[in-house]
Amino acid sequence: MERIQVYKINPIINFVSKSFAVLYLVWGVWGLISLYFTPGKKTFLGGQISFFGYIIQGILFFALVYSNLKKGRYFIEWDDKQIRYLLNHDRQVNTIQISEITGVSIKLYEIILQLTNTEKTLHIELIQYKDIKRIKEKFEEIKENNELKNP
Image (cartoon, rainbow, N blue to C red; front, side):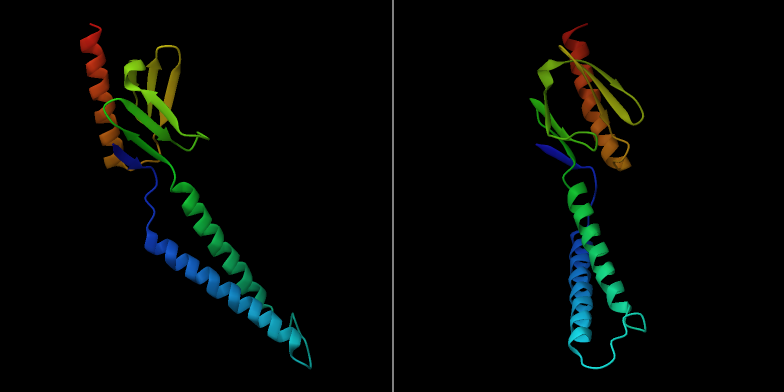
């Protein structure tokens, strides 16, 4: 099965982001706890507010990692019998049997598939150019095969 990931996510960037998230959260929480247990003057707004900033940065880094993991699940894959895809507008993996495709219309950033009893549209605007080219080549091949079967 040939598979194309919609978003290209660098695992090194994810690892570094997770590391910074943990570092900032630990640093911020440690600072607040040490400030709380330190006897004497407790000035939260007098220079110690930076600990809250570290905690917020840690949360934002975790949000970045979560967003990357969520985007990494989108794909289009195919073999000789079926096409499977999960794109931004879909909530679950869709499977289309190639034998059910009766017509293909290829536009700039969308592919419209006429099936035996319905129509599906694949929105491919967020995919890199070289991958769009491979996807369009595959659907051109399907279109030509359908035209040969049904002249």
